[in-house]
Amino acid sequence: MQALPDIKTYRSLSSLSRDRHDSLVVVYVDLKTLLLLEEPAFTAMSAIQPFVQVDKEFGKTVVLVPAPSVGGGRLVLSPIGSLDNDTDDVRKIADAVKAGVARAIDAGSKRPAVFLAQAPPSEDVGPDADYSRWMEVAVLAALDASYTTLVVREHLAATHGAEAVLEKVESIFMVVHGASSDVDLAEAVRRAKAIEQGRRLAVDMGYGDAERMTPYRCAETIKAAVSSLPGITYEEIKDLETIKREYPLLYNSARASFSEKHTWPCVVKLEYRSPKPASVSEHIYLVGKGVTYDTGGISLKVGGAMRGMSRDKLGACGVVGFVAATAVMQETSVDISGILAFERNAVGPASLLPDEVVVSRAGVRVLINDTDAEGRLVMTDAIAECRERIVAARAAGNRTPAAIFTAATLTGHVIRAYGWYGATVANGPARRDGYDRRLALAGLAYGDPFENSVMRREDHQFVAARTDREDVYQSNDKPSTLTNRGHQYPAAFIIKASGLDRHGLASGRESAIPFVHVDIAGSAEDGCDPGLGLCAITGSPVATFAGAFWSSA
Image (cartoon, rainbow, N blue to C red):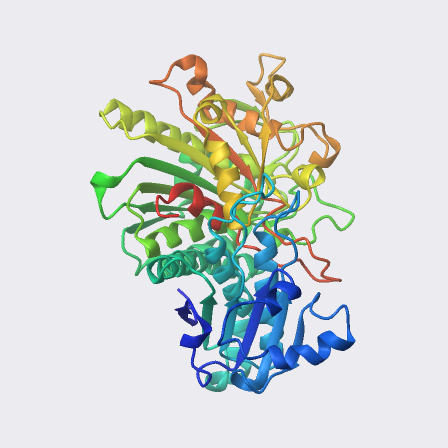
């Protein structure tokens, strides 16, 4: 896995040597309060005053000013703005840190120091303003600004050889004014670094185009990344007959890709086991959608809708990143089983066709209506496998609480409904036990908010078979964006086709299995206007999963 820049932490500017850093990024709520700051070591006030006297707008946007008293002579001011208004949340801190560090890097800084001059308020804030992890969020933002993607690193190495500079910064110095203790600050950095390593793995894979990250090359990347991480075991399934037998929906969805071996589907399984088995409080099963390119299949994407479909694997990338981060962290409270289903949804003579009926691993007859609704097919048999494993573990006397989660860029509807936010859709047992709410709260704390959607009876009615020739409808024949409840009803299909409908609330507590479908089509990218390019990839939901499932986070 990619090494991170060295991070040093301080609770006062007086501890930071001027010779070690070459820029100072000051992150603050408002300039008036900053100028009243009781920090004797903050000697750059004289550099600010002339600008304040002539420009009433000075300090309201990111600005660099010469300041001989700070390292490198570069002083960057990066305002946060209010943190106590109705819709303010921790992302405002992240935005300010990232923008400030990026400005310092653009100015030539290789060793930026970030001075978090004011802690966020602890009371009288908005309902979504959870600042409990603000230090981790700030560190993650600084690391985000310093990140160079895999595809760029490979290009630089190919064009410049040994002289290529692959990292934007050498080190980052974090100065947190008023931090409660060195121990708390060090622990925040430890958590942030683990999350960032997982997030970088997810984003590195995500930026790979359809040829750089074919199903097999995704598997190779994952294997190389996790091979040295403690507590993880790796397994891959490439044999087509095995995939046909164990993951029939994935197999049939991928049929058109069989003409070229390098685009064949594969399944990757990751198991993480806690270094302290006695401390494990739950077992989380994660299934990631890994469609390395989505043409729509025979239900072809037209009118430019195929653009960006190399990102249809970001759910699987997020699962990989979270499992890797958990191993880096050596989290003790959770065991994880991850199944990543990779395919290219190609088009050709052997394509899966609408009107076909395919029998799932759970023995459910699925009527295909739209081959562009492949994500639910790719994941459903893996979810059925997780269900089987939970049932078997319980039968063997293992009563460790277990739940199943997906991660998938599944629908455009979730973006139509919520914009650039992810959404959860939970079954009855998961809602009763608060699993979807856990994700929402963790997202607020780590700056990756999720909306909690609710599955209704109409979702199940929509996919319920109306003849004796099939058991469930995979979808309708329209885009999700033109379908009522277009991001909710796919969860109802998954529940039926995987056999999870046998484990709802009515089955009793001994049989019920919590299930949360996590649609990250909105949160996986930042939504910023890229011109004719593609949006930046965020690494969601790595941080949110960490906040939800790590006892230490």
